Every structure is written in C-alpha cells, then in structure tokens.
Image (cartoon, rainbow, N blue to C red; front, side):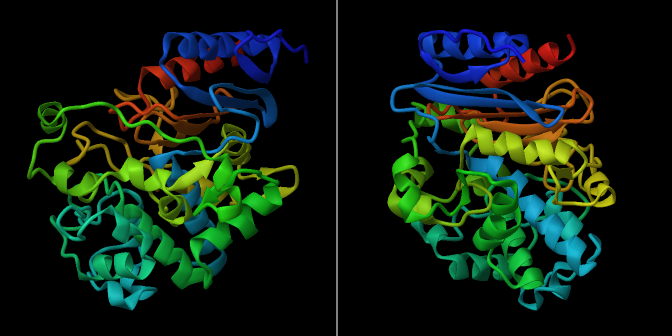
Length: 379
C-alpha cells in the first residue's frame, strides 16, 4: 500500500487509491464546511484512510455523533438476543414486564414501529435524559400513538432507552459496560463510548449548533406534529451533550462519542460478516436478519420511506445515507455524522465532525465522502 502526501491541513495517513477522500476533507475544511472532522475507511477489513483536520482535532479526538450511536447500540441488543436465544417477534414485555404495551415486539422497537416516539412534553427538559431510571419509567407509561406494527415513525431519542433497557433485562449489564466488554474491548477500539468516562472528556470536540430561527425550524419540523414531539425534549440538546453531564450520560440514541477510526473498525467487523481478526460479534444468520429491510412506507417523522432495517438505516433509494448500494447499512446522526458498512463495495466508512447542520440524514458533506470512497474501491 502506497501512502499519499496529505494536504497541509490534514493529519493521519491515506492510501493513494483513496486520495479523493483526503482531498475532499481538505476542501471542506478550507471552505468552512467543518470546523473539525475526521474520516476513516476500511476496505476488505483493512484500514485505508485515517485522517483528521481542523482546530483542536488530533488522532485521539472523539465527537458526540447523535443518532450514529444507534448502530453500536442496536448491535449490542442483537448480540444479547442471539446469546439468549430471544426472537425478534417476542413482546418487549416478555423480558421487561413493566413496559406493558403487550402488542409491541422487539422487532417493532428496532424498526421504529412501536408507536412511542414522543418525548417533548413528557419530561421537563433535556437534563432529565441523564437519569436512566426516569427515562425508563417514561417509556413504561407512554401509550402508543399508532397501532404497533401498522406504521413507522422515527423514535429519535426514545429508541435508545428501549434498546438499552432491553440489553440490561436480557444480559444483566447496562449498555455502557456491555459495549466496553463485548465490542470495544475485544476489537481494541479506542474512543468508542456511549456514556463517556470522565477521564476521556478532554478528548471530546465541542459541537457547534446550526444557527436557525424559529420560523426556519417550524418549517423543518411543524409544531404539534409527531416529528415535533419525537425529535427532542425541550431545551438545548447540543448544549447538553457538550456538558460534562451530557457527555457522561448513557443515551443509546444520541450520546455516543467516537473516533471515526473506532466506528470504521466496528462496521468493518459487520461488513466482513460479523467477524474480524478472530473476534465475532454476530453470526452470519443474525447479521442477515438485522440488515434486512423491515418496512418501505413513508416514515411518520422523517416523511420519506426509510427502508428501516433492525436498528439501521440503509443505502440505495431516495435518501442514500449510506451510498447508492442497497446492501449498505449504518446510521447517520443529527448534524452530519455517519458510519456504515457496504458489503457490496467491501467498505466500512465513518465521518465524525463538530460543526452541525440542520440535517438528520448525513447531508452533502458526508455523501460526497461516501461516494468518493466507493468509487476508489471500485478502481
């Protein structure tokens, strides 16, 4: 493998075949599209891009990546279920009796069909999200907004407490230690947290929220819509995750703090069929189930058809958050982060960043990176 000479503003290294990816990051930084960002790519399991740039960014920088967190969190649940022999069509209440809502299955939770995305008005403000027990109690008392399984609507934040509590009920461990013990540790992932230890807070890039006025936001998310109720509680969620309390919070739908390198290594394990370098996360059979499209209806929160897998967004289609290939799967996060596996292109790609845009699905900054990596892998 030959390494390219990187542009002056970029740190790390890049295989010459993937030089377009490094050139994109340099151009995006120069244009102000990022304050700081990192990109990592693996091809056939091997690292080919590990670059970063921007003020304050280094090899060790982690960034809160909002819903990109859902991929690792969902994988933890798939692992716990596989080991316990639990079916996706089991009612949530069969392992978590206090949840009630006996018509809601684990499959419904993972593909956003459970009907309980609402959080605005259910808790006073974002700070309550640091209290796991309070959020679990909220999930137990919520009533579905639609018949479970009859529709899908993005459970932007509530997804996390359902997935995390299911892991705890099935395995006995909270999600943060499960992730450390069963994924980050075995794969030697540095900078892979859902609930960042205080000792690692200094590595976190401060996030900058998009500047939007109330009229613009109301046009993006109409007040009193399901989306308005689902996307966030009252308060400033960016300010929250920038705080020590927010960084330490285990929020399996929003608070994951990662290096791009750790996310790419994680997804490379899934892209390789669930096993890499002697570490198996999931059987091929479970991985196939987890990445099969579950619904194709328009999403009640995100409006367009999302082709939800079990905990993952996908490639192809109108949104193409994971590139043009239907087989790709992963997750984007509010503001622009994304991490994915593309078995057809034999790639794992991750982008972390600190300047957020009003976007839940990656946006142009990351789609150009994904497409450049796919093009490079095909040459």
